[in-house]
Image 1 (cartoon, rainbow, N blue to C red):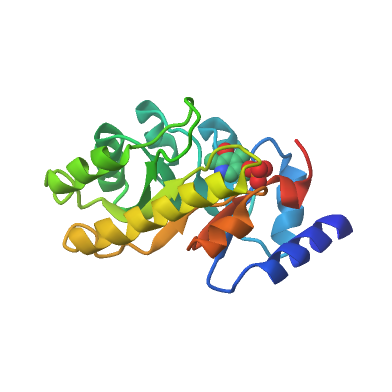
Image 2 (image 1 turned 180 degrees about the vertical axis):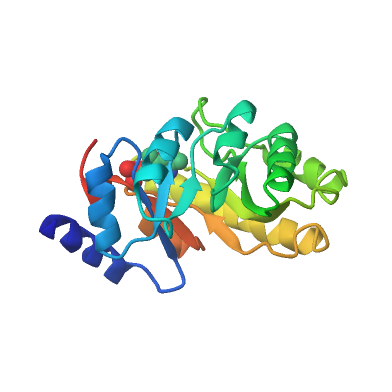
Length: 221
Ligand SMILES: *Cc1c(COP(=O)(O)O)cnc(C)c1O
């Protein structure tokens, strides 16, 4: 508990007050989340739906749950009643299903569009030109159950800081550009989710408004 408090305080002193800290709690036991909650954290990120559900049932209701990992269309229904922000929208199909489930629960669900910025093959997300086509298509405007709040991206897992910086800076440029180009589609576009334990300082320098941090808070998995 004391070590966790120390890590949280350390981290918070390095974050500008305009940057939201999402504690990435995937694989951590409920007791650790409870400690993080008692230390004052309210934004928790999970990448597996079943795990989020199990934890959500056991923990206080004022926690804001962030879906940060790849989301399968057939699993949206489980998190639709309570999820605070979905960071990992990577297809129109997934956005449409989220819209459908949001209407079922009489909610509007905040979403980020995930953009593929890394050099690695395995990461999910729209390519920048796909993002443009999606926003230009008009398909998004009819979806009143979802609110597009911004973009999310993961930089390459690399020691090459210049590379990581270029990737973040590219995402920030894309964010600014689509916000300007599609104002009627993106009236609430103000979240740029980028930066993890190893690269959040660079991400913040490049314009991040939300960092997703696991290891630097809770130790190695
Ligand atoms: C695991 C994960 C993180 C946190 O990674 P750390 O290096 O532990 O800070 C952030 N974002 C996503 C999408 C993740 O899956």
